Image 1 (cartoon, rainbow, N blue to C red):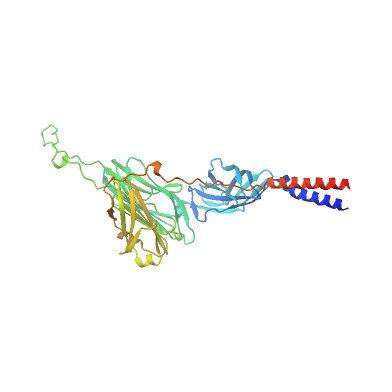
Image 2 (image 1 turned 30 degrees about the vertical axis):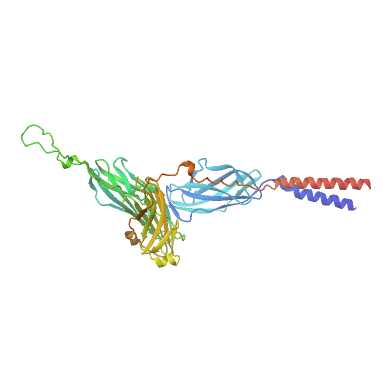
Length: 451
């Protein structure tokens, strides 16, 4: 009787251990976390999906499907190019895949992600992506002069506003020219990218353009999402006037122009302004940026301010001259020194010296020809964007008269090998456990027969 009970217990243990082997790997959950802001048509959005298994294994396919509630239009998947992920390794801690989607029709799109594996499939709960027309954002723009001569500098500003009091809006943007040869961008904001405007938020793009060739008509375009000309500007650029003297009246011949002494000298032009860094979408405190502005201070310094309602972030860029610069770089930051002492003003990287007046921050730098140094200043309180007018070029204290050189590739710090991800597979332990129990059962049966 005792032997029968032992046999029964052995078979139950074997059944418990071997049952998972019969059913194999299972996906226990699929979760998504798409953007909360509305997006304009033609703007890419990233939708991460986290797929988790009961053990490490592979899923055959991970797909995303999305359909407009009103129009029935399907979301377009731009990445991965095939529209789905195949042969993806999944772990018990979760594996993340990113779908990049867009839509050409304004609508609310219900979407979900499904992971298909050998013994079945698992889907996420349905989520929504709101897609709006680019006209949901207000766009205005202006130039300082629409009539210019080749070589003139043109100041262009384009302002975006979100009239919604409740919903943030994300849109791609691009500054283009009808003919790429007519204008070049000398300095200013990034000419393309993606921006998110908080409810009632406003952002102004500023550019300095150079008129390159004679032209007329609509030449400047600023696009939002699928609208490539949300703002457009007609320009007239004339060829420079001839410097030759006119022929005498009634001579019947064309006089050979006689250049003046001043005309023989090449004109001296000011060095180009250093382009300002692109604005941020959030401050260091995680607050949405509601306004931003930038200043280019000569050819060596540019600063961009990104402003929230109760915080701000400033990014300062210094570019060394062709001869390079080694020494101390000191900026007078137009902020309150008491706020720095209270921890409301922080720097990245941390300066080697900070003294009052307003805040004087010093960084030791070693820069080669035209190399750049960037410092980020975070302020955990409300700041007016007028403070940008008080930023000035830095004071320089060279430490060596020799020309610095960039680090050779052999001198660069050795890179740290990327950690190798590992997963835990329970299948091996099931097999080993089954073998041990089979061995134990064999000895119990043999012992029973001897008795």
